Length: 513
Image (tube, rainbow, N blue to C red; front, side, top):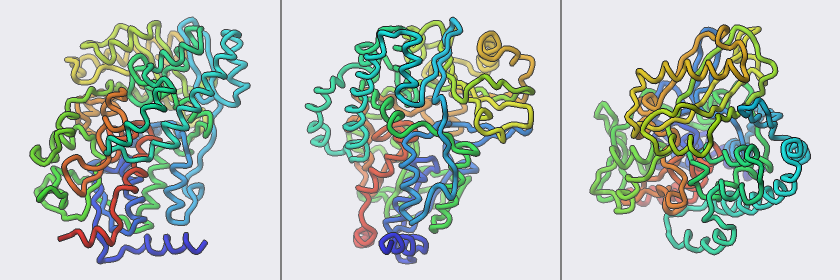
């Protein structure tokens, strides 16, 4: 189309006189923002402190085994398609998404399994096997989740919420949907069997929230998966990062890795650029931050330049921490699904200890990722690659991870060997792990929180860190700690929010004075 051709031609060759946008951080939020700002006519410079783009979606290679370090699931794939379509290109020419079946397998301590995904009838068949009387309740839960998704995701997720009037206008609709309830209360109102209640209430954990405290608005995740499906990027999430990086370079975005931004240069209330760790200053017309906003406002923006709201939000409650164990095996486990939620013997009590406790719990629940179930290239022939995520307290808990890290590794392997991976202990190889301390050091995540601030109602929408800089003109925020929240759909959607806020290139030039 003519319009598409025009966008592609203008965005591919940066205008030397165009305004400059600096994007801090090459996570998915930062990459999506860089592309959307580039499509608006800016010259874009991306600064990433790690050696590669992707943020938490790094790729680890050990002895022929490959591991995605961060997100492993693709939902709402249209959000990625849009980034390529901005420049008249097709995502499928860069990276392949394949649907998963099942989406997730739930493993319970009595050895029972529940496969979730596929058609509604597929799910109903599994539900009837466990609790026939809950089938109708599930259908009503899906319908309620659809209504939540229509409002919370489709209508509002890409809308700026820095104006409180936008938030207050939605209160009647949110009350009508009983959003004051928690996710657990929502699910329990439709389902009775404890196994099904657990299986259909874990979604907030995917974005750093406790189902017993998180607003039921996040119940929309269930319908989001149902509407658009659950996919895997062949080659892993790292392949998706590489695809987006390739697009960024093709359209003229300058990428500098191994570059740490020390702080934002603010003059007369306006962001004028950034100061690097080596003292060098890079001027800019606007600055987009994909850094953890707790770190941004705690260390990178002068305190006197911040609004009262930003200073208050620096006291926000954080998400839990994450312990992630990576390993290969010298044999395959063909009966293990691509994604398994391994549920421990306790649920509510465990989550209370994870989010509010000061020590490691005696038990745990796990998220087990076996990418070789879909893509054998993740391991040498006859082997499997695994990633096991265990929610743990963040660094506000006085846990010595140099001591507890190896112990937790052994406990996890022992339990997997006892249950869903018999024989794994004797076949494990090339294992290593990350703790909340690593998240803090590597990603500058305050207290090593896995998902920045937790998604409570009082930390969502207008109450969350705004996408428009609070107190600083020309500063914009994307990523997990901003609206609409954590998870790949949330952070990529946050770039759509700032697209509405970033001034047109011509206006940015006019404002330079």
